[in-house]
Image (cartoon, rainbow, N blue to C red; front, side):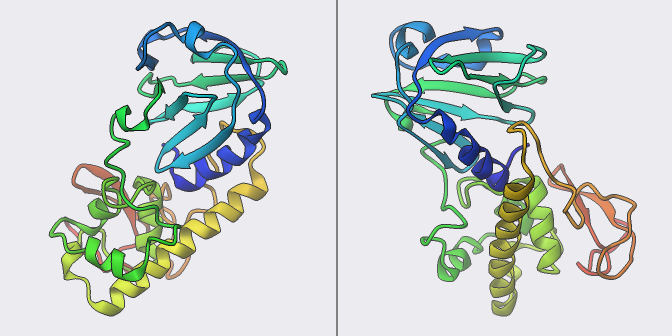
Length: 265
């Protein structure tokens, strides 16, 4: 699933569409597309010019003339810019320049919304603070951790912090040397500070890595990760075997030694 760093760089790559106008919309899987105003997708979007593109949490938002085109990728949704072939393409948007933007989603879980009000988009109004914004201070973060749930669940709660998902929470907690099973409200002050710094470091480093290497907007570059997706491999810090556990039914990867995770679980 694309998370904050992935979508932030994809957003930058899609800036080539700013100033371009939509000429047609082809929908191959109708359940993907939801028009939240009166009219068909073709009718309401044809002729609309892309004014601005932004990311909020795990949403990508195209600001059109008087409307918003909102993408929620979910698990397998990806955006492909000017790429031939329609395999798993749910929606294709053609532009006046000849460019094509395809929403490809083999599990068909993603959603695209057309609206005149972002507050109408499901889950959007409840989004929490952006972890790389000025509003995300250490004090704000400390207050968010006054929660008895596991720290991994708090980090991935989009109503608290917008944009961190399963993969990056694993990397953040590994860097902070914290067990994902720890109750959030059990962290000591120095642990909160270290975790706050780890969020900044892991997300910032990911932005740099992906920005340097992304050539296709549908790519998901994760080979620089330390633990997520590395089950059975040696920990890059201590050499212990990386293990896979479940935290609230979420597949989670940890170094038992570095993160003090006890087995059997």
